[in-house]
Image (cartoon, rainbow, N blue to C red; front, side):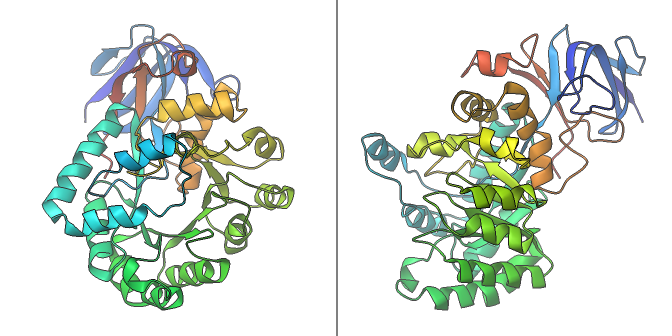
Length: 385
């Protein structure tokens, strides 16, 4: 094997307090040796390897871990977004518009569109990505979406319980039976996780619990959308079910926060969604101070967060969610890894995947200091699969 050293790093963010200083495990004047996609040594500048890459004194951070996306879809909802910016409230109903377009698209079209979005995400520094289904809402198309997603990442999530499709209007329980039965049977072979939208207008706590229990019986890990549009049972259900993550968490009571803090469930914030839907931003400070484990993800989707920019999400979290820059960067890296129950990504240390971002900046502060500027100079990673 050939060893490569990323040398002359001005500031290296390792996310490991064992080898660096402060909450980000920072090492100055550093180098990282990697081989076959794995870090083999972290140390001072000047380490020797077969090949050398010069970081030119710039800052290097772990690759972003995006633990919540809906990247496989067809169609466009720009008009809906424009209407929302003019004051129309978000209610999730546009999911059916994307479902119609996705059902009508060929598999080749879905693969091509997803490939383009993955390339965009990689250029934005995302080196690990989760992809949900949820725009098929029938047996064949949910299975097809997961097949497409699995071509790009092992972190695939079956989300047939995204919304009730038009053909099941007024028959939500019948649709849940389909999700828990034949749809899950077809989806499970291409899924690692199962998810449900526990929200008014989508699925209630009992229906969401039934979906999660069915998925667990098939060997899938559990995730949940909860507390996006208002206070509700999602967070409490996620904790009770032992979900790896509960996502959105825009509205949380003190009891919700206490339950999360006492659990292993990660609260995954989606600040670009709150930006795009004009929802209030959650107070992450309140949760972090209580001891809740947090992540940040893009929720890239056509209706409520059409962005692959984790840098934007970090800036919004600092500006509007009361997070420090260090907390936001950890949430977008090692926090996302925790939400996916991964220990091999989100950090730069011996034995971890060599997923690293060379910033076009001398420090990580510039991700927030210069919002909207493309600061990912170089992405060093192995293929996502």
